[in-house]
Image 1 (cartoon, rainbow, N blue to C red):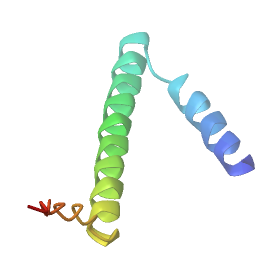
Image 2: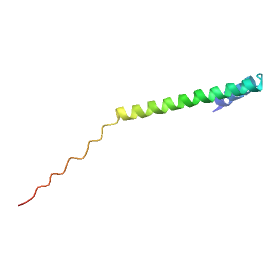
Image 3: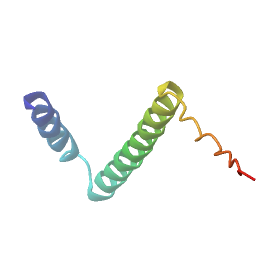
Image 4: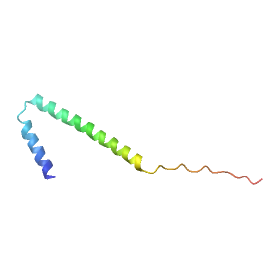
Length: 68
């Protein structure tokens, strides 16, 4: 948790050197890239799960035997 706080602190100090529009552009691009990364990781996890989980077998069709 501590390295994350240090990275955030460094980023804030780094952003303070920019102008307002550059800050907005930088933050927007970071959020956009972060969103794409999260979406990609999620889809990769879903594909990983579905490829390694055993396929659920459909229930065998019940055969009705009529006693006539």
